[in-house]
Image (cartoon, rainbow, N blue to C red):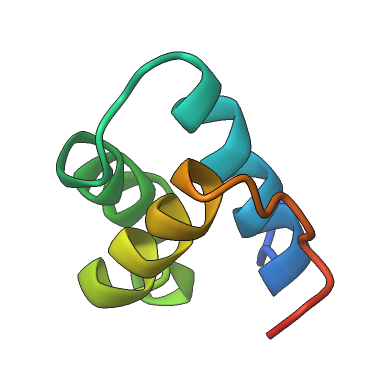
Length: 63
């Protein structure tokens, strides 16, 4: 079995998916950590991206 290491774009797209499913950043971060381990984003980063989405910014390319 190969181990997939997500890039930042993939993780941001996953965040948009979860955001659209009405999940909170607090709900999503543990799922990311369980799934991707060390490759997951931090809680703070997760919250920051959810705030961007709430503000209507869905550009996954910007830092």
